[in-house]
Image (cartoon, rainbow, N blue to C red):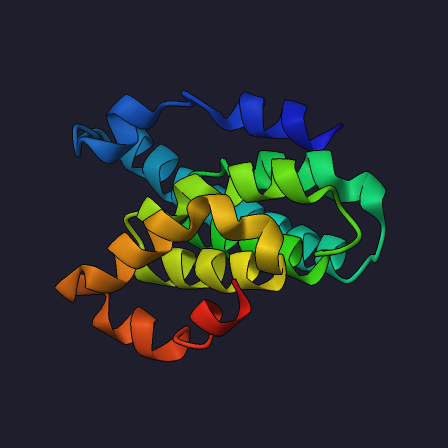
Length: 156
């Protein structure tokens, strides 16, 4: 099964019952526990795959990394952003920068941090998102991220 098909198959599976806390019958509770366990297992598989793709040094993994940046898991999105940064100079810069740009506004700080670091790896090719990086640095909620990725302004 291709990764895109797998991600699509996971969307909408009993989420309304599981995540709204409506599971009251014993079978629903079992289903809820099974769903959580399945999510953890799938998340670990996808995270491992993102790491593997980042270490592959192949331009052919770009489409799969793009799909992983859309994952509902912050861990998978973070590792996909990191993988794209590792492949700077191997994958096409312009589409990679366009994929990483929305991750700068992610709800999870580590995803934002890894996206900023990955954009720094693209150097002057990431100049189009420099205004987004500056906005991120001005936001007081991003102080921890800014300290860890301050070097980016010297690269971009």
